[in-house]
Length: 514
Length: 89
Image (cartoon, rainbow over all chains, first blue to last red; front, side):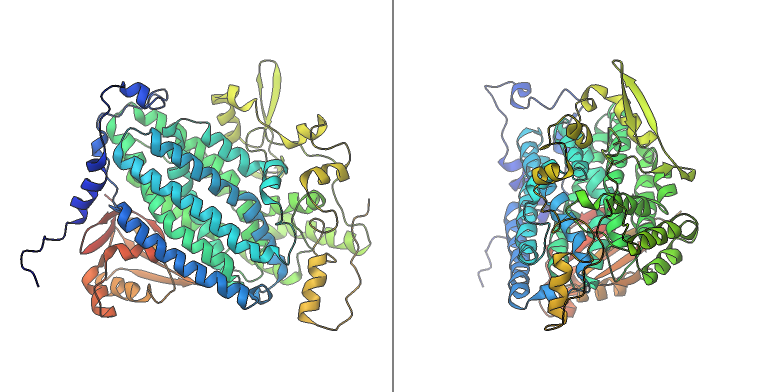
């Protein structure tokens, strides 16, 4: 061994050399021309060098570990295809959660990829630019691995064939789309607070951790593998989010009220978006890991409580309306399921009769609300369907102008009354599902009066025509295949033929009574 | 008042020795197992010592290998050559 071999650099030295060490200061351009988006939000940064990535990840290690993650993931993807893993899931109804994932989440990963590339160019600090650059590449990896993995299910099941087109047009997918459109049209510091902090740090745990555990429990090798592979990047992103917010708060006291406003806004926006996940957890996992309410307690109330106690020394308060979210935890999944059951004819997923064992599980998990408010509703629907009068709502719902979810959420203190709020701006009235959504509108009405609201667009004649069939065509939903109840769907028949080869297919269950 | 830091790892061959090392080195760590993942909560602080993992796997463990196993965390991260720490300030 050569005794004079150079000593291995410490992580700190390597990090310093490979971030700030490769940065330079422009000499023939003014800083404000070089970084044109860094000023207008009112955030003041005095020392960009104070930023440090606690993981101290440099690009050489980044490639090494990401390559290892990809090797592991693609070995599993090969194995899924080779071993017909689609036949091993507990119940084909489960896959409706995966359909929501590819339609609603994967396009957001791509938006995140694009916008972190923007941050990697436009934030004035070298440390945070490098972190944003890695995250941009991560998000592209998530998009690609989700498409690759789910494409295996797309060979057999419906509703996944045109997810990006659907993302841009469908009424319920305007919820995630408008969320991210709002973030990418904000300034770089708001985006960082919105996506890296409020969404990644505070809320994505609820999608990627207990739900993915549920995917594993239901035999979905595909989703758990891409989910955890993505989530291994997310823990780096969460750390970026927390450090970013701390950095902004430490740099200037004047930043505190600006950041607080963003935390309030993006907590509520993210929480409303996750109402889709509450339904995935409580209604779409045949074998259950935990309820939405339990996940909320574990990942928001406990983890978020510790986080906001930590941020209190900067003068940051827990997000406004977090108390409302906690009040809603026993109701939100049932309210969202109700919306989808009413409108499955216009959705690229299926719904179904909630069977007795599942009703009992919901009663057990939601003792204060389920039997009192929801059980009879589902039993009524079951009775209607048995008489050939399965109820589909053929009216178009009023949407919240902010989160774009149909106005189906109840008053914070009264589960039996729908919550309506409104604001008037320039002589026109705008409607909201909650005080949280109304506040966000009232702070930036000039932004949200531009919202592309799917119901308004249908009424204005911009969505393919005046009939349900016309709109479904414009959505690229194949009527009778992608939509309606699971029972009697082509997927149902295919699954029965897999499980009971040679058996005579059961007769179709009744469809809509229109 | 103590506040929990939290680390969630995948249930894989790479993670098992890390979980063992955490349990050995953090007396107050609480371990909960779920399908495909293990969540470890610990009041105020949790440390992963590279040496403890190394002694379990029979080769040098690089602290940054944590990136292959972790799926969620709560707390402030500090990563050094020989240990990975999660804490609340």
